[in-house]
Image (cartoon, rainbow, N blue to C red; front, side, top):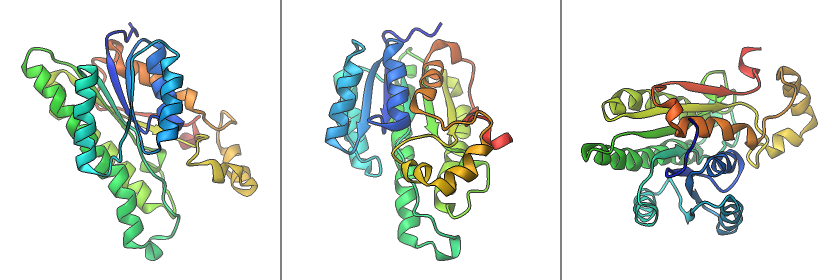
Length: 256
């Protein structure tokens, strides 16, 4: 049911953190994997790690905020891999925290250019490919957007980040309805406090950790490996009738 052999998955931001955790899970389940990242050294390290699973791997340098790069990299991925069956729009940036009345326009646009525009460019390219395949009798596909629990709780001093992630949930819900006729599903993932490079500074801060960690019922930070299973499920045939949903993976933080 969860066999991914013969499938190709694209993971943006797949050279580290949650993205790499998902890419490893997909490769271990038999998928060939394409990863996008901005740092060549991180791409190379992730590519070597993923190849250890015996799968085809393509690592591409891509700034998802650049529409031209997204289009070119997606075209190259199709040329190299033949198809893309699952697309995980995971690449994202954090926000320099500030209350809204002190938030600069430049920072607002920087965050949304990656987290929202980048997801739009990525999902559009994947949807175009999957719809074209469906019209030729090869229906089906998986679109997944990486949101955040910031989309559903009050993310003080992070309005730009919260806006981008709330929009991600809304876009995915729209895609679930739009793409259903082609057998394409769309779902979002909402991570809580996960130990990654993006959150390292906060987690290392004793005051922050002392305030947040006791509010996580599982009493630990999430790790990238916690996202391997959901990636496999969403890319597999097991989820073919599961669409328009949001998967909160946060150790029960948001409901405590």
